[in-house]
Length: 326
Image (cartoon, rainbow, N blue to C red; front, side, top):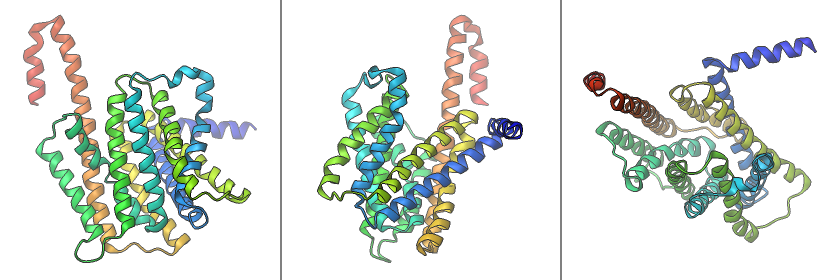
């Protein structure tokens, strides 16, 4: 017992460090890749829309302890219409993603899914009126070029599954943009509860149209899918709390490695060179966009601090301008 306690203490201390947080984030990507593989496996017996419904249902069940802690008031939102829109978009994204996983090789679907950050950047410009410099626009163009490399229009017929995965990524990117606006007024708990609830509402009618009562074995698989999704999310969130976002965000792209390994051993899938080439273009552009967002966030925080100082001491404006130039 003492050895187990000591080992747990050492593990907790390690996870609190930078390398430990990176390890936790990489483990979360392995969990997500395993969950996606299970979706592909179970889709051979159940329709992806039904799987999406059960994924949403079990996801809401995992959030019930939060309801017990904060009460029904946790659902109260300052922007309910925007919550409805975000839930509808996220529910559509989930169903498209699960359907795409059922017909697209894991590595290819994973590589295309990384375009969600690119779509989120475009959405921020269109709907939030954010400005993007030439470097971020260049990163977006490179990422879209990577998607075209994987799709290879003109060289091969573009599969419907690949387009569905891209639609899922676009919807997820749109949902990310809405979260930015919601986070100004609503708590993370409220946003999570609304999303889980709305995803059930959005997926239940399509699920009923293709409904097959799951067997006890299938129900266990569905519960495992929901559980893995929750565990992966918690692990990734904890990693972000323990280390800077610029250190954790790039680890998400190890999902492509996990998906390739699992796809090969579980389904006999071998990613072609186009998938790897396009995937690396998308990954490179998305890493740049993410790190640039972190950099701009730090600059905005510094500017806010300096604004407070300027109000107290206007003479410090010269030092502020000099620091921004450097």
